[in-house]
Structures are given as structure tokens and as C-alpha cells.
Length: 232
Picture (tube, rainbow, N blue to C red):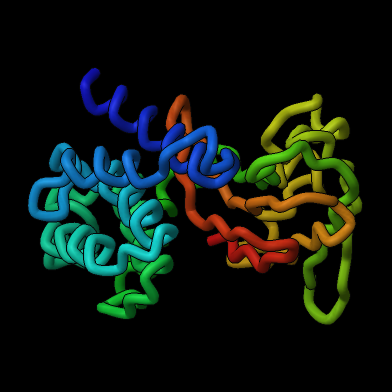
């Protein structure tokens, strides 16, 4: 429960420093608070929480603190290139996000391959989805999702209304196999989806998510208008 509260605070912290003016919010106090919770780069000895701290510190230009946190994450890497020694899918995915953020290439190819292996056993029973979420202000417009099947390019245009997809039961998650094209992923393993949201006004994050039972795994997340998402 303590870790859950800390994670919630970290998410609110990152949202706050991204969208609130200096007059309303003291980012320095927030960073001081975050730094006070860090022990040798770790937050609560938890890879997910520590990954959030990497994102926050790097966003603030506190490179030394971000590097210390990612060094701690690397210290938890197993000999099989997963995280931690017990090889948890969520922690391995979060470690990759931290590596991405800091442009760390240490065994990154091996970690990616290991994550693919870990996902194979459960991928058919879960849901792969795309999330387009606002960074600060409300967003709306259309995204074009395109992909290649052989030499043929296909695409689907979807409406985004403040992060929700009206064509997918007004959900925040665009189920790829159900709302983009039926069995697209099952018939095309390893496919790359180009998500073009240039027509959606406002700053946004494009995220690839895997859901299995009640567990959500963030596999790729980019603050951009256009992203290539590889679904393995």
C-alpha cells in the first residue's frame, strides 16, 4: 500500500511540473521532496517508482540524480537481461523506458529480446492498445494509424476526444485487434504501427500498452505528434 501511494504521488508530481505555472507550484520544493525519498538512487527499492524518478529528474535537467537512479535500476538486472532477478514483465518494461529516457544502450538489445520472450506466453490472452493522452490541456482531433502487410500499406483514421476514442466504446484505450482491424496483430506478429496525430491539437503522449487480466504494462511511450510503435 505504501508503494501504491508513492507511485500515485509521483504521477501527480510529474503532471504538476508539466502543467502548472511557477506562481502556483514550486517545482524546486517538489524535486527536493523527491530527492529526499531517494536512497542510493532507489525509490522504495522499486523499479517502477524509480523509473518515474528518472523521468522526473531528467525532465528537470537534474542529470546526475537521473543517472544515479538508472544506475540503481541496472544494478537489479539479472544475468538473463530482465528485471529484477525474478524477471518480472512490468519491471523489465519500465526499465526499458528508463533506458530510453537516458539514451542508455547497456545491453538494450538483449533486454528488448528478453521482454519479447516474456510477452509471448501471455500475448494471445491479453489486449494490445494505443493511448493518446494530453500532457496539460484538453486535446481533440483525428489520428491516422498505418501499417504494412507485405508491400501493401493500410490505414485507419480514428477520432480522439480528450484522450478517449469514440469509435472504441469511448475508451481511453484503442484496442488494436478490435478497434483498428480485426486480428491485425494475431495475423501479423512483430508489426510496426505508425500513429500520426498531427491533426490532434495540443501536447500529447502516444503510448503502447499491453493489458493482461488486471495488469497494465507500458511498453513504449513518446511525447510526440507521430510515433512508430513495434508490437511484438
